Amino acid sequence: MVVLEAEVRDEPKALPAEADETGRAKHEEARSPVRWVLLGVLLVVMIVPIYLLVVNAFKSQQDILDNPFSIPLGGLTFEHMSAAIHSPQFNVIGGYGFTLFLVVLVDVLCILLAGPAAYAIARSLKRRTQLVLLYFLAGTFIPGAAVIIPVIYVLREIGLANTVTGLVAHDVASTLPVSIFLFVGFIRTIPVDIDHAATIDGAGRFRTFWSIIFPLMRPAVVTVLILNSIGIWNDFVSPQILLSPSSGHYTVTTAIYAGISQYSTDLTKVFPNLLLAIAPVVIFFIYMQRHIISGLTVGAVKG
Amino acid sequence: MVELAGLNAGTGQRRRARLKESAVSLGMIGPAVLLYTVMTVVPVGVAVYLSLTDWDGFSTAVFIGLDNYKHLFDDPSSSDAWYVTALIAVAGTVLMVGLGLVYALALKGRSRTNSFFRAVAYFPHVISALILGYLWAAILGTNGAINNTLAKFGIEPLGFLFDEQFALISLIAVIVWAGFGFNVVLFVAALQTVPAELLEAAAIDGASRRQINLRIVIPMIAPVVTVATVLNLVGLIRAYDIVVSLTGGGPAGSTQTFTYLILARSFEGTKVGYATAQAVFLMVVSAALALLVTALRNRQDQAATGQ
Figure 1: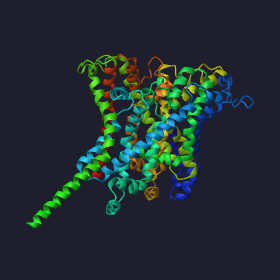
Figure 2 (figure 1 turned 90 degrees about the horizontal axis):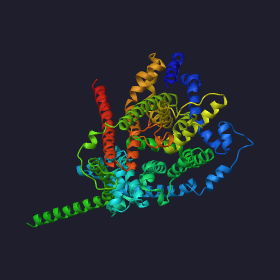
Figure 3 (figure 1 turned 60 degrees about the vertical axis):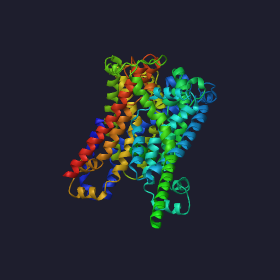
Figure 4 (figure 1 turned 180 degrees about the horizontal axis):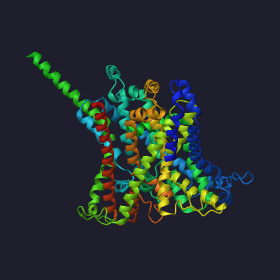
């Protein structure tokens, strides 16, 4: 860290002469050795763990232990990956299904609840309504994992303890603050005249929202969907604690937790399962990179 | 007279319309408020209530006032957890913001190469911290990739995860590895809004690249740096998943964070009341941190515009 900073500070010494010509300065920047050292370190440090994950998912325990970094061309095997895919216990592939189900259900319910609420808040001039927004925003201060025990207490009182409904209710509630906040901000940029026109044409407020305003909110909806989907997909504490193992439902993270805490020394189980757990997210990321990066950034900063 | 009646009818209609308007608003906001209240706000209330009791998770809770709060720091494992949490939050934030700035300055240009490297720095942010922790445990562990490779050259294994101090450093390093890319992206977005003319003008005036970065660019993106600092601090003070998978709080409890301790205590099923007192305290601290840093920032902004 200290070394890296020092290197950056060294960089300008060679530059001032060219600095008055932006074009040449840019070329200089691209060729600067310090920059390439920085980027080289970045590439190695970020990619090597993933390389190890991929390579070792297809090796035998002995090969993993003896030569973790190598690719034994003769010794690669699909055996352990296949075992992980077909494993009857803590099956990650099985976890995909339940996790995806959770993600879709939470996404849909969140939009159904947050959309109209944000619309009513954004279009109201009353102080009372603005207080509702603050009320939701306060939720972002609550450390979810630390107060998960009281959530169990509440779920028990309303008879939803250890049920998928209870987990979904909790997850949807946890997505509401940021989603509503982002929606309110976006709806306020849509001219009110559009609403008035719809009202004159005889549309009620729900109708105005769902058929006129909602289609215009596409960028905000995409942001919220990405933010919530990745959040729910990666969530560990809520499914682990709100759904006990006896419920028989595993998400990808709780399946990995159950499996790896049991077989942590068997690397032929660790690597293939971790690869299966990471693969969908990484593929989704590569495919939707731009949307994801901007979505998560906007969500975090504004939330 | 007729006119007055008409006026009255008008206000009546308007009142009715306003009432209907309010009812519709309630219909739109109500469901969200209800669910959020029951699932998020009520649990916080329950936490505050339980923190004032000696509840063990099963029997009836007995009200004991502020007793749990008095003992918040008495017991050694919770003061250790505070030290670990504070160290992770502060060191992690400094490193992530620092590395974020360095790499953002190197990658701010709008080229394909830069956007590739930004994605490389960023990708762990979309993967579950739990899974990243297991991956790093397989790399740094006693039988991990690094120690097995060292063993081939006859070098003693390094205690990345089994030496108490080393484990804490490893934990922070993995957290930084997973999280600094987010800061890079945040800062690049801010850097791209800094007007190019400003930098050219400074260059013409003979400022070096280092002076431009330190005196112009970084001050201009200072508000974003503050936001990033708050986000990192508030996020790290809640660190849990990665602790579970990377170190399991060990060795000998040396990497237990506050959230880890709260959940571990809760599931021992003896001191739920005490654990919720700690959770309430954590909540207050994270809210206070966020408000404090934002307030400091506002004051700085005011001072800057006052000049």
